Structure formats: C-alpha cells, structure tokens
Length: 346
Image (cartoon, rainbow, N blue to C red; front, side, top):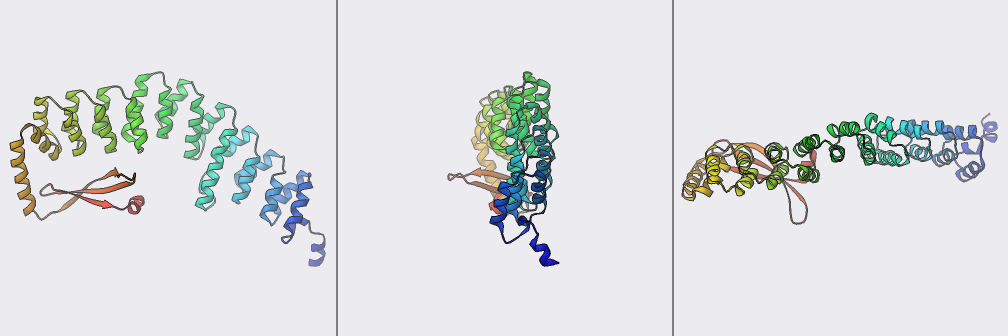
C-alpha cells in the first residue's frame, strides 16, 4: 500500500524533489490545486512558490493573517492588493504571534510597508483609530495626517496616543490655543529629547514655558524651557519652585532683579538654589554658609537617599547615566555612575 501511494503521490508532496516540484508549480494554473499545495506541501519553498501564483485575494489574505509560518505570511502579504483586505490585515495584526523577536520585527515592518498600498486616506484614518497594534496605529496616523485637513479628526489625533503623532496633528490645528496646550503637554510628558525641544519651540506664552520649566518630567525639557524664558518674575518663580538645582541655577543666571534674587535666596525649595542665590547677592555670607556645611558634612555619618537619575551626553556622543543621592542628615550629594546595560534593564 505504501509503495502504491508513493507511485501516485503528487510531485509537490515529495520532500526529496524540490526542483521538480517548483517546475511543476511554474506551469500550474488550477487555483484549487495551488491552494492545496499552499496548505499541504511539506517543503517551504514549494508552498511559497504556490502562494505567489494564487489569485484568490480572500485565500491569500487568510494566509497573510493566520499562517503560523513567518515566510508564508511575508509572501502572502506581498500578494494582497485588494484595498479592503489590506485594511483588514493591518488592523487585525497583533505582535507576539510568532515567538521569534527578529521575525516579529520583520513582520511588523511588512505591515507598516503595506500602508503604502492604500490610496484612500480614509482607510488610513480607520487603521489609525482601530488598529490593534500601537505602532501600526501611529504609523497610519502619521501618514493620514499628511493629507488630513478635517479639524475634528486632527483634534482627535492631537489629544491622545503617540506623542509624535500628536505633535504633527497639533501643527495642523487652526485653533492655536488648543495647539499650544497640546505642545505644552507633549513637552512636559514625552520621553524624547528631540520632540521635547520641537514642542517647546512651538510654545509662545511665557507662562506656559514657566509651567514646563517647573513641571516637565525630563530635566532637559525643564532646562530648555528656561532658555526660552525672559520674564523676570517667571524666572524667579521657576528658581523658587523647581526641585532641580540645575533648573534653578539656569533660572538664576538669567535673573537681574535684585529684589527677586533676594526672595529666591530666602524662599527657594531647593537648598542648593538658595545657596547659589546667596552666592550671587552676598558672597561673604555664602562663604560662611559653605564653611558651616563643610564642617557638618565632615562630621556626618552619611545615610544616602536616592533623588533622581541624571543623564548627559559625552564628547563622543555616548549617553551617560548617574544615580544622584543626597545625605538625609547633611545634604551632601553623591553621583554614582550607572552602566548602560543596567540602565536598559530598568
């Protein structure tokens, strides 16, 4: 029985004769047979060759969405041309289905590339709003916004989701008061230094810049906002109310009003900011404070409390991270270098 079966087995079912199977598929036009080969051929290259000759878009789309084989999904994706099916495939895509991180990344890139096949901007908007994958939604929104002028839709994209998409949508809003609020929110909350700067560059109100300087999550954003501040009372407000010595010091350097400096020397939240203000307006008193602090620190049995992680870029354009600690008894600061490998695990 086994010998009889082997005599009448289709060429494409033979695991030892790939070349012959591929030649047969090159001439095959029967769509039913090609579909059978896609589903049952034991050799991957044979299945791929077959899917490339299938014309039934529904069948191809099903392989693109549901095959457990990475190479088959890639081959099927390249065959789909029907606009509605492209949208369905892209919207339904969820990462983490194949196990391999490398294959998942390639499959993600293929789905993003499929967006270029869409000719109707409304379809991009649909994916941006309803796609299951967050990167797919962001990429679709970014493409849709280029041709989008509908203010209601632009507002929807600007108020939630990916920060880059929000920024691009806000740029096209006619209502500048709304756009300004969005730029401020992006500057205060996003985690991209480049985007923080772009958003801050869009902010026109001095009060909004002061808000960013005091409340942004990233210290770099706070400091960049201070660079844009020129209003003396607002600079004093930042110096008094920021918890970051670096931000406070940046604000102090721009303060020229002696009364505001004296107020900061007495009322700034940050001890180092108060000390720096005193150095500016009363050098003698500053030196006395410094001597008192040194004596206190020399006698102290330090107990360190973590404050924050600082970040800088060296001359070779490498990112350097430091954990900053403060002694709860004497106020002394200590920086501890954090290797990049450990930082990535956090």
